Image 1 (spheres, rainbow, N blue to C red):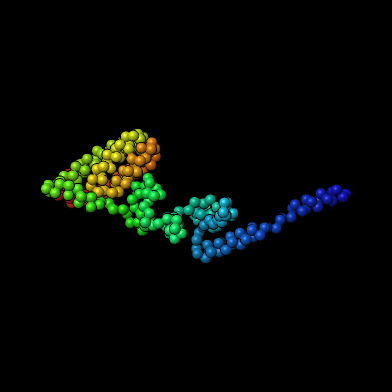
Image 2: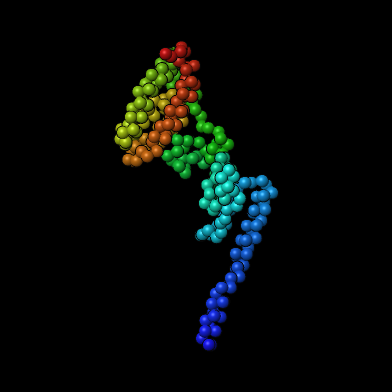
Length: 248
């Protein structure tokens, strides 16, 4: 009987739920607090997590991720953040600036040489100030090359605008064909023309595509080319007053 009694006693002990650890109790109370805040703020659903130094300590979903279908929020529920990531990024950048890890006057090229906005500073990026579209100083320098010819600058800009469609088409075809060499050569050719008329952002985009082509990897070239196509009409509109007469 004694062995049977011992077995029954051990079985009974296994059936008794173990008391939660202090950490589990803390996270349980924290979860109650988060859920209370969610209810008070009228938030339909959210996910919270506690991250340790090297691992995830706790995570939990609260409320509903889809009210119409009564789907509960889960730890891995994706949420639409809209512009919240900009707030987090700006906060981290400013904290790093305060700690001396970086300077707001640093150019983006220092951290991402392939960025089409490599010439912009961190301060400009944080304040949503775009780099200069057209540098009037470059245009003034080009005009000064041949001051005796009043049409010199106008002719230069006209040539650039006339050649732009074929230049960009060659770049488009090279990227579509996956030809790295043709891509960097086409980007370099168009970059030179952009530099002569002071289109700094176009220069930066072409330079980023060229460096990718020279490196033999043009994975992001199509995206960069799309940026170039969005940028060009703005440059063209700013150049037209220098031409003197409407282009057909």
